[in-house]
Amino acid sequence: MGAATLTLSQLAAGCDSKPILKIRSLKNGIPAQLVSKFSRDVQPSPQLQVTQEGQLKELFALLQEWKRVPKSKNQADLVMLGDYWLTLAIRQKLIQPIDPAKFDNWSKLPERWQKLVRRNNDGQLDAKGQVWAAPYRWGSTVIAYRTDKFKALGWTPTDWSDLWRVELRDRISLPDSAREVIGLTLKKLGKSYNTQQLDKVPNLKKELASLHRQVKLYSSEAYLQPLILGDTWLAVGSSGDLLPLLQTEKDIALVIPVSGTALWTDLWVKPASGNPVSLVEKWIDFCLEPRIAPQLSLLAKASSPIIIGMKPEDLPTDVRTNPLLLPDAKILGASDFMLPFGDAGIQQYRSLWQEIRQVVTALPDIMRYSSSN
Image (cartoon, rainbow, N blue to C red):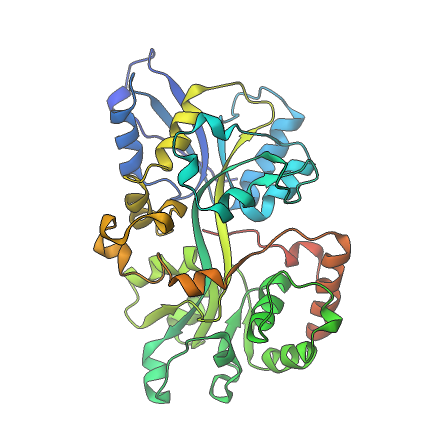
């Protein structure tokens, strides 16, 4: 899987008596500065072994492997998983519930994030269900565009409706995902990303066909290079991919559509066959601390959900004034987590996706495999 292992515990070198926490994470998912701070703050000073994977699907595959081979030597105590994988992880019994009563900072999580991880045994949202994961960081689907190209056009994109403008014919890349593409079209029409009964949405098929004619390529993974080279002028993608790009590409800007967008959240989950490790609760609670949340948001290029409930004066300027890390409340309120569908809902999206693109699209193409690469 191309995993890279970092023992982020310089202070613990050679000290076998130190408690150990084994974490599997996305690449660059855990800022080293926070690990060092955790090691300093928690006593006795723990040793964190962080093994990084390139994609969320690799982390999900590890959970499946550990179910087949319980007590595997490479099993972690805690695994990062995207919210879109949570339903499958619960259904396949790959993870175990967590007890929010063990976290001092759980109550600081905004309600919508608490609801997101409370599920029944079938993985569906359930207010009376158990808590299956701890939200860690979140981001959104955003529009990236070439400022040099748009300067000549005399306008800049602000909302999904701009993707249909004639000037962008054959200049756009979209995710290779039915949920994303149909979802953003639904938002243009004033609907939710989680709308079902698609045949009852007026003009949806017509709008999708028009958008399809605008697209130069569909890709969820290989869309950055065409944008950097100027082969495309506008791309729709994850803020997790695109925010780091701003550090090196001065001609690229990002915007969250004002009518709302799709939200994703990376979560901490406990493998089903894992043993109780008190450091798991300590690490999760550490990540939820209001003093840590702003640092996490800046260093990880993704927002801690905790910052949404914090007072503006308690946030650093670089967080408070960044609309990508802390969107306007109205935009955030109009945005949606992509919630799990049953088989009938999945089939609706797959059928319409096939019809518009006139290709056979496998089921995984309607699932977002990576929220932050």
